[in-house]
Length: 519
Image: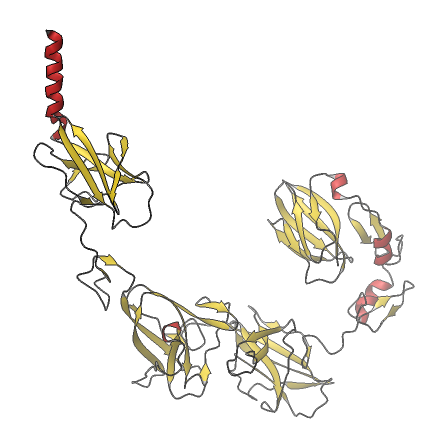
């Protein structure tokens, strides 16, 4: 009899449970997903896909749990997140969850992270500050348009123009279609245009590209590389841009550092006629004969000028541009700039200048990166200095050769390599003989902790070691330090002549020495 009563009670309890079906709409879920789950009491239950982006889960809830029934939906293991003031939310000390009284209400279809069904999606600009704000839109489609005001100060441009214009990716670099104005004649031109949110390139020009800015790759307001170096602009709100100076990233009033720069030019190899050479560049707006050089005799011309520390391009000319250098684009001392009017697109092949102190530039030959005569000297091993006449000598000047040739002899250190005694008592009469015969103990043999590779190399060397490399010092055959590198496991000798070099590696308070060959 008791068994019958228990079964009857259990049956009544089961029939008294509330069937509840929970549904979530993911049409406005931002992103892709794989799994959708019903989450309650630390347990996740898979939901059934009943329609595109629609998921359902049915469960039976005892009446004593139905009054304050809490739950959440989750996507790919991530629970819904609520601010906490929604009508369907129960705020606990640790979390916010959905809550419903199943004794009174049945669950309804709700939108992900909302208490109500998803609204019909209306795409548009939902930013109220934008020009094209759409009050009916509920989903942003990245279409917001903003007012952007540009200013450029032409007071220091030193270019001839009638009307300044704005060109960029937003107007397909159209030339004079977006003309700026200077209504108050203060040399500051401005314009306000509507731009859709996004990233743009632009620059200032004048008179339908008759003149344009020459911006430099190293400037902090530009993007790109030659031939396309432009200003950069990101639009995500209404903008009033700072006034910038023509060709600069900053205002004309911004303080600039000027230093004394001495230019030196050797005209001895120029066969034509001229009166006075001059230097022209971005530092004097290519003015012609405003910066002429003084005659120092023997075909040498030089003069010092105050130049600001911006990266500059320049070249030498003569007699107010009657002649000018024709620099080869493959030279190491030039910088290529794009010219849209040039047949090959590379109309500006100039020298470049970058410095941060008073500077005396090396004497250079017309149309060349180096001096017209590159004398080099060698010691014949008998105390005599000779000039082989091929530029391959060991010493750059006769005086340097004489200083070393007469008194210096060399000995070999198995660890450090060749060194000069400077007293004539060494085993070898010159460094080359010493290098050829000096037997060095390899780093791997003596320490077994480091390897320099590749060796020989065209210039780039890597250090293979488990230890921390604190410093790398590189010396030439004369024992002169030519390179110092800190906290790196590599060094580069690409800019140095081929030959043997000596390397000291400081690692974990130990010094390891070896030689490398650059070919």
